[in-house]
Image 1: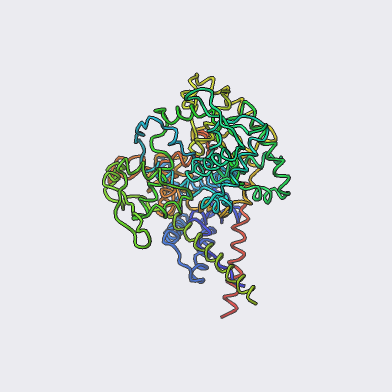
Image 2: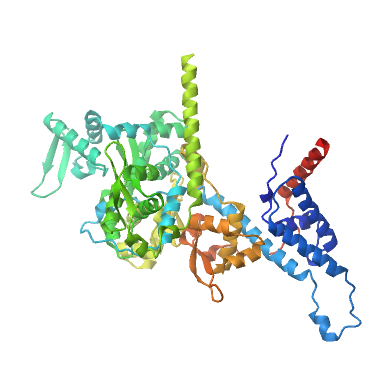
Length: 243
Length: 195
Length: 195
């Protein structure tokens, strides 16, 4: 059995250190430098043994840890120092501690974002409808977008979860049977209601419009429907004959 | 989960493509007759005054659309100055051309999954894209590319200044892989049938 | 025409682009307060069991989206179910930018302790972040911030909706990484045995 251990299991030396701190229940406010350095180095050696590329950041951190360890080993001359120098002398671990605490916050924040990402993926939205047909007076669209708006539109497109297209429409697109559309129209009118002519054209697709129009003509020819208009320029109404 | 609600969600997400009775029946795991009943119930629901959308049916495909009476408001929306400038369709199309030029209309439509002649017209009208030649092959379709105005408008010196799109390639790979598996399956089935 | 119906039609047509309260007020020719009332009425309407869609507020706009409970049914119809999520590196980088914007690459790398140009490219390509200016000082490095698409991607109304930045928690355990160490040990043992 072969496991593929990825080095990117950890997001960098800070991530690895955080892991060690948790694993060995280390108090971040009082890091035992010798211990953690040893454990960190063990990891680096293991990586090398597995002939994995160890990113330079890991080696830099190794050097920092070793330096820190040696500083900690230096005897403290508290007695001999002037008072004000006492305050200046810093715990060499301070900076690393701050860095780890800071990084940890964002690692947690990333986890929260991941949860939100998953939640959001459960919502399906719909691409904007094409409204160009409604722009009657052809008022030119203003152009006030930037490159990120364009990228955003593309990101949405790539993110869009396409539902499977019905097999029927592909066939229908090529040739919508007029007979079928005639039946549909009769079906719609079966309750004896009058219907606005335009409501029979729910699709913008040109082919669909033509087919519907031809179907209406054919139905008129066969005397199956009546077209009414109350006065000039009023809307046309379609009714089934004999109802 | 209520079946009418599921139908509404499915039709909503399917958008302009719509869905067939059969697809709805498959997803709901019911007979097609049952779907007819449910669609009727949904239609009754959309009849309510408070509803601005309705179900339209064409050649066995169902889809949601806005009610005709709402048209004047949609028109107002389009003409409103607060409405965003370039439509999302045009922006998508522009992005595809920017990253994939030279490209034909058919290729753009392949990526977007919908007809794209209107957004192309808009972009040509704004001189953000232009015809840059003809592709080889049947019909020698027009190839589109971005213009100098495009670069000026977005404040780019060259096209190289566009941010790279890592996820694009990932998706392409996935798609290619899917295609590969589809073909493999077809071949396996064919081989099985021949036996 | 009923105002709630008009709102439904407008939101339906706007799709994932969404509309602001102001846009709706303009089109309906009413005060924004009135739109708040109407949206509340619409939301109540969508609460009904037989509704599969709802109103969500994302990236400063109102949008229609399917209800969460419908997701399993929609997923049955999705062409490519693999929605690529962000890598851990990209997510960490994005979290830093979201909470500390505007921020330079060097500052991000300081916090993460590793080079971060790749995740930055990924995030730019996905339009989740953008350049928002230049910092003072030598080289005038680029400052990054989040985009509208960022809010949309995580379903946030505004940046204020980001949860407060988590604080250090001592009680925590990380099981996953432990698993990693177990595997690493196994490998090392194997490697040792082979020798």
